[in-house]
Length: 352
Image (cartoon, rainbow, N blue to C red; front, side, top):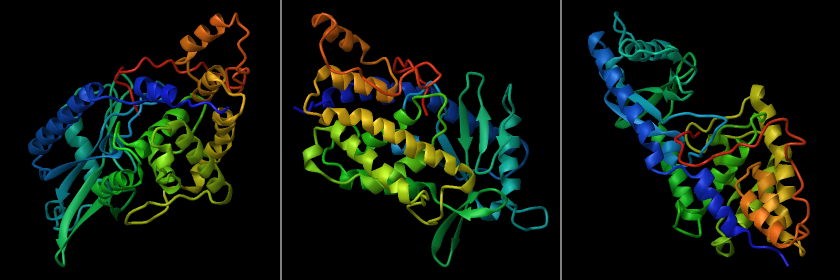
């Protein structure tokens, strides 16, 4: 008889995946500190002041996950009025000039071991403990009665309103999920897929945004999964795997609907597709007629490359005298991946 592994997966999500509000306190402190640094630096340099800040990315979408292989703080967009971003001769400042203005302002008021850096779509601020804060720079203006936002991207201003992504994602989660608890099921699917994608230090996987778009494409409302995150996750992984077999390109779900994959990083998409094969092989064991708790736990351990289920596995094996069935757990353990399992203790404040 197939095994219901939902309770085990839900406990794993709560302890090793979900980032609670308390764990985000350091990130919020750093966000505010950088806003204060920016304000002070802009004032000192007699530069225009920011008119608003926009939380974005996994923080705004509530899809952050615990991680010991990758870390970042809250992405915090800073917005200026376009009319204020004028050069000495009255022309618009370039995207690179605007980013450099922000970088210089933050750097002038902080003691950084690694100086803030201008990157393609943001200013990155580094911390000694390995965290970083990304600060995208936007300009805002009204034209023909419509308000526009543009991102200072690589070499140019590009139409982009970060709140549109958050609104889109939250709407999809609400409309598709069969439940309204614990962030709703579709959001949990994103978190679990992200946690799995970061479970091996040797893997180079697509961004959390790409994973979120793929989950949205292939997760659908199914009342029979309301209390079965294990089946929902297995179905989503299968559908994403199948989709990537015939189409490796992923596009932004809101305007501008541009491609968010690049030729230079398609290897990450292929890595995702290939590793999904192994993850599906593990998790699909819950569908086997001979699957019991031990087999299911070993499958989850192997899939997420974790020690989280070791205690219960040992209990079962000890109670059965070491011969309790359940298969060998199989899969992608240390024999095939030359790194140690990520041992996450939860609530450490490190996340991605």
